[in-house]
Every structure is written in structure tokens, then in C-alpha cells.
Image 1 (cartoon, one colour):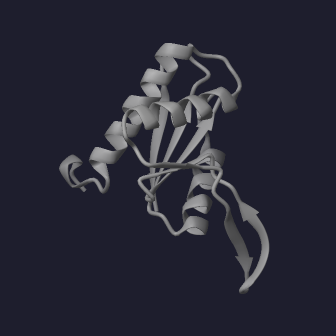
Image 2: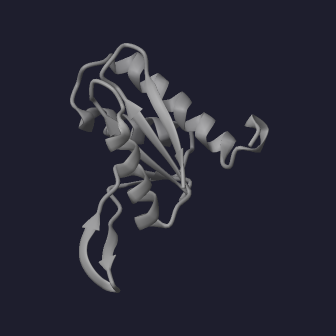
Length: 125
């Protein structure tokens, strides 16, 4: 798939820009929650619709066995997960794929605020 055909390309671009602004303003090395909360503020300033800590049922054979609460859902279409880890691994990518299956959404963004340069990954189900 070519770069111009990426789904939700413009929305992802705007969200990543907000994450860069948050990192540039707060600096790196804090815990995850201040970055998540700062993203909510920045999304509001940039008129990006966002829900924080929305609940989704986790079902096993049509019986609810738990719930998943993503950090953020933007544009009602994109799961946003904030991290402060050494680096992304297959574990985080696998988690995001599970999150996308649970929410029924197609695109997820992982942000790592641990280092001075924003690390991010786009995950598509």
C-alpha cells in the first residue's frame, strides 16, 4: 500500500503532531499518565475529538470476561496508547492488535515518551 493510500492518514498526522508538541513541552522521562493527560489537553486545543479511558467489553464465547480501557480513542477511529518504555517490542505490537480487535477499530498509535525523541508506531488491523 502506498503512503498516499494509508487509512486515516491525515488524522494520524495530526495526532502525531500533538504527541510531538507534548514531548517538546513536557520533556521526556515522566510517567505515562502526565503524557496521556497532556495529549487530551493538546487534542482539545487542536480540535481533535478524543475520549479518555472509554470502556470496552472483553468477551469469550459471547460471555463478558473483563474489560479493556484504552488510554485514548481519537476521531472515534484510532486507539492511542502512551508508553514510557525502553523500546517497542513485539509485546506492545501484539497488545495493540488485541486492543484493535476488542474495540473493532482498524488503526492504533503507540507513543513512547521515554527518550528525548518521540518514538511512535502505527499499527493497522
